[in-house]
Length: 71
Image (tube, rainbow, N blue to C red; front, top):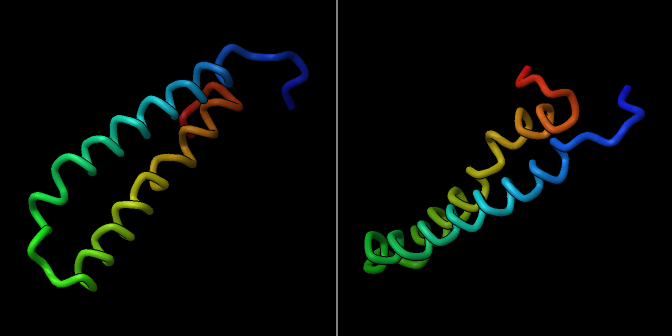
């Protein structure tokens, strides 16, 4: 268990915010052009999937922030 502060936590939070901002901008810029003509239900499903997909690498990233190891 960690007892001292580590540089990985603030750097990790800033990195996470930057990565989410870039991901959000990419999704907001390109996805509407691709699925804009689709039925509303299909668009909703795509946006829900894209809204959850960023969670996939989050576990390993949080482990790195706490331990310094990716596993």
